[in-house]
Image 1 (cartoon, helix red, strand yellow):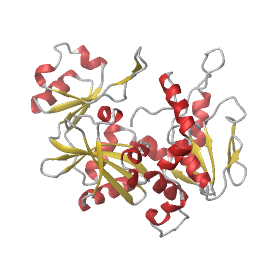
Image 2: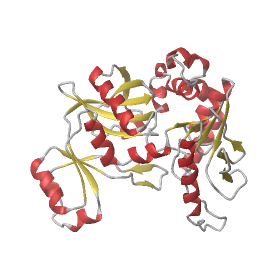
Image 3: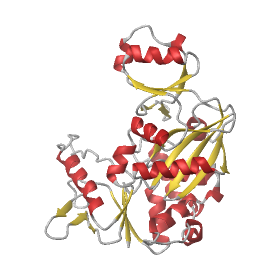
Length: 360
């Protein structure tokens, strides 16, 4: 068995996971995707048994492919000109074909594409028995104003995708979820038509929860910020967050497992808000969401080790991830062994390195 990670080798999750796998004796490699370079060349042979080569890596039975960055990128020539879209179409052909080979995908590309649709994930979460706040996805002014007629002072607004920009000092600014009342709505309808958004009923919360799903194993962590912020990510980036393990209620766990069956995902990071009565409300899932940051705040979570155990679990294994996690080094051990590299990473990040994730 070998593990191929579809990500740049410097990706802030691919690098430590690959290192941990190699330390445990597994063959692991990163493949950045289709490009004109020798490493970026790929082949799909359809002649009897189908076969795929990703760069120098030939996929074989029982190999594992972690689609860490499941989107095709746009290669750029030395003169800054982008290559034609044939690269993206070829990448999709490869990614979908992986599902037809005797290899294991985390996650399957079709499941990834499905669940990243915000409307679909909220609909399927509700159909799985999870609590979902009333939500409107729209750029229709009457629909938006009607939603705020029903929720005049307890609604929030989210962008479909984060807007990120570099400030002069080197700081990175990211749009966040924000509260919005009917009185704050702009009078001009065109504001709504030009800016599709997600409007959602606000959950009066005690705290947030980040839940990491690995197969049938569910790990939940309460996230508490000094001001019980609407969006905890900004506080987490400034290390102003307290993370602690928390039990997942049985009904929520059952809903999560139903959700993973409906969507086909076997791995992902889910966000919940816990209300003042203890009810858990599903907010979203990122099927390749960040999770190693939890180990930084809570080393005993050992998510890096659990994830390596999840990736390498033999077919039909009945061993729990906890029983196998000791085979792999921890996130802390990775950081200790890469201290000099981390200094370089910080310098690269301040210069706009594309391989640092924005979400903590």
